[in-house]
Each structure stands twice: as C-alpha cells, then as structure tokens.
Image (cartoon, rainbow, N blue to C red; front, side):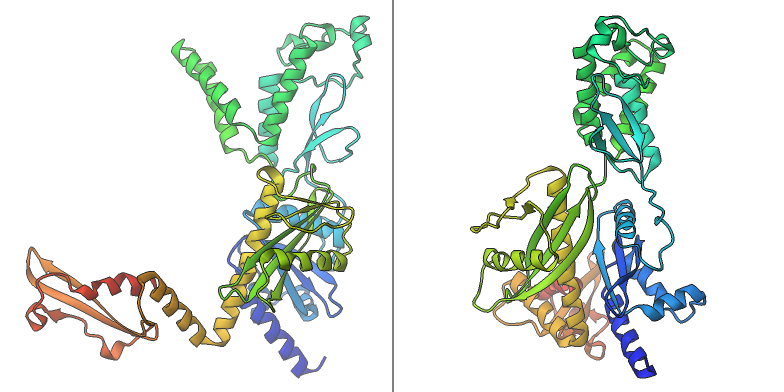
Length: 458
C-alpha cells in the first residue's frame, strides 16, 4: 500500500469514527479481505474507537492493528454489561487475530436448575441443556451470588449431590444431613418437607431467576413490616436487605439468554423523506447475538414498510445463509417463508431483542443524516428551518429570526435584549445587546418573544 492509498484509508476510517454514537456497544475491525481482526467493547463508542487514531498513540501493537484496519462496524446496546457479553460471544465465535482475552473458551457463569426429581440450583460455566434449565450468563458475579443467596434463604433448595428418587425416599434410603439441622434445607429426602411444597419453592425460585421479582418483593415487604410491628428488628433488617437486593438486581442480560436458540430479528425505520428505509438484522444463535447489520433500501414505487421487508428478509437470510425457524418482526407480514414462522413478541427477551434491533436501525439512520449534513451544511439548516416551520405552523420557512427578551427591576428600568438569526446561524453584526424601553415603546412582552424559545431550541 502506497502513501496515497494509506491516507485515503485513514480518511475513510476517520469519517466513520466521526459519526459514531456516544453510547455503549461493541465494535469490530476488518482487514482488507473484510475478515474480523479485532472485537472490542466500549462505554462510549466514539471516544473509545477514536483513541486508536490519535497521533500520540505510541504502543507498537496498537500501531500494527491500526495499519491493518480497512473497515469498522458497530452495534449499540443499552449498557456496558451487555456490551461485555456480546464481546465475549463474538471473540469466541470469530477468534480475531488481535484479541487475546476470552479466546481460551472461558465464559461468564450461569445458574442451573436441574431436571432431577428434587431439583438443585447452582452456578456453572458448562452449559448442557440436557441437565436442566440455565439462566444468565451474569457479567456481575456479585449480582449472581446475591440471587443465589436470596434463593437459598427464601426457598432452601438442597445442595447435596445425591441422585434422589421417589422410590429411594419411600424405601428410606436417605437421612437428613447437617444442612437440615442448621436450617438451610427442608430435608425433602426424608419427607420432612413435602414434594409438592419443594416443587412450589422451585417454581418461585425460577420466577426470581427470570426477573419476575415484583410479586416476591411485595411478600418480603409485608414480612418486613410484620417483623417491625413485633419489634423484631434484626429479622426486619434481613428482609430489608433481601428486598433491596431484589430491587437492585438486573435479572439477566436482555442481550443474551439461553432460552433463545436460533432466531432472526428484523426491524425497519423510515428516513425523514420517506424515500429510504433502514432495515436492521440481528441473528441470535445458542443464546447470544453473533450478527448485527443495518442496510439502506431505496424506495422506487412508494413501497410500504411491509413490502420492503417482504423483499429484504429473504435476501438478507440468503446472504447470511440463515436457517432460523423463527423470525421476529415488528408487525404482521402477508407472505410466508419455507420452514420458518414469523413472530411478533409483546414482552420478554424476544421483545427486548426487537427493541434493540430498532435502536440500531435508528442509530444508523441518525449516523447517515449526520454524515450527510457534515458534507452539506446547508442541508442541516434547511432541515432545522422546516422543523421550526412545522412546530410553529408558519406559512414559510423562518429564514430571518429576531429574538427579544425583556427584563426590569421591580417594574422600572426596563430593557430588552435582541439576537438575530439568518439561515439558522447567529448574525452577531446585526445583534444589539440591549435596547432601552423608550426606544421601542412597548409596555408588555413583544409578540416576537415567541421566537426566543424556538431559536434556543435551534
């Protein structure tokens, strides 16, 4: 690569960086053959990615990485924790050349509820769905232990590793252990606790793991108030700590869930002119996002959003060779895809994925608008004037704006300040700092005061 080509490459990359959002998310660097060579996460995407292209970067490894970058893509999420989880998944899937961490197969722990006759609940890093149901993973280990502690105190699931069966209980093959004597287990293995009661506790524990803690919080709050009325303040304090732990606990990432195995997600967002549309595609495999892309489609015959999705979904699925049997969409579509069903989620993990896809489509739309306005500043001015014209219901574009504001001291010494905007830009040469009241003879706020708030918004 000669010097001219390298300068063109850096200019292209800096153009992408300049339009990155200041939001949490993940970013991917591609080499000349469009292979992912690095995956990273950021609390602020723009700040983090731009740091790679500063002239003062002196680390040799960073310089080598930057010299190999030919393209950048990114995905926005709602929190840094979600970015951490997606980064983990992408690194293990693509094994980028310049990533070192997380390539050893390690992952964040999950919580397992086994399929045994008397289920156990414990943390694990090995996901095997034949053994039970898994919840997580958890990027904050302290949150995971807080939930396990709450479940242990409230529902007392057994912790022993015996393979307990119904026949064994009836034949009295087991005996209560130390956990029963210290109050950490109800000893269902010797019928000290009924099978129905134990299963009821496990069902409630599953609701806690799913994040349905509101009902449980109400019960704990009532218990806390009951202890307080009986002046049992130590027990009330324990209930308070459980209540606060549930309130502060983020049950699991909305980005990663082991209950979602193989799903495609599509959303569509129109641009302001309705001439183009932005379609975001997210693919979830084995409980984690491994692909997220946004495409721009140009309308030719005023197609509806449904008609654009009808064309885009088969094309995008073929491009990525997706065989997912479930496709999440924002509204009903009037066509079918072989071996796949459309689903419109109303709540839960799949609804969160749909919202995340829509957020990425809107962010892509905003970035394109920002990039276009950077190349053509007059486009931004016209857009702002049109927005102002629409909000104030004006007959023509407010090209020339004069803004006044009044002030006085207890009804005397009244003055007014004036600023002037032309083409949504301040004209300081024609702006008077203050005007005395007698010079324009108004005793009340002038009618054009309404421009003041509008100009401030602009």
